[in-house]
Length: 188
Image (cartoon, rainbow, N blue to C red; front, side, top):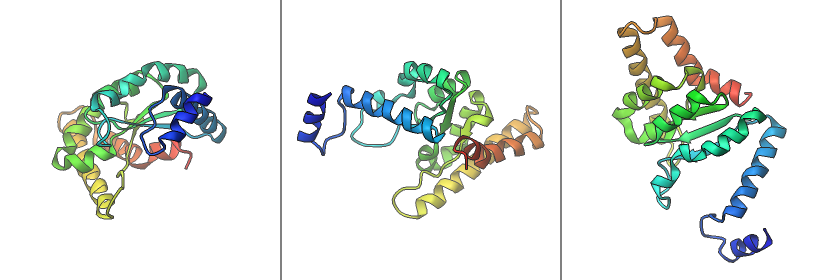
């Protein structure tokens, strides 16, 4: 651990990749999240240009997610795109995993309904979280919210039109995904 910390101190501007330090920090975060009653968040998929996309697939966290299950600590997978189906699978099979694809919606724009519809195929609607992934200029917050609302409305309308859900079910799913789930998971 000391050797890993010394290597890190020698190159503080580089992305932290040392597995010893990463494991230490993750388990420290687990302890802090448990003490505060907060979920643990992992940025996965699309995002930073210095990452190798294939290494950010949320399904690579499966072993860790299994270890977290007995602790009851919620794990929130953020961004996820283009691995949103893998994240959806994890949220469907692990009771403590939640999904938030906020960053993808801002970039996908008109493609947002398709992304949200794919999530709805697997993710129980009580496990989807909204975010605008607000970053950069203020307009990003607005666009994130706009594409989420439009995308979710179209995805839910398709379910209602197909007779899968009633309009009451769709309204409940929209409320839970838009705010209710975050209030519950983050204890707001």
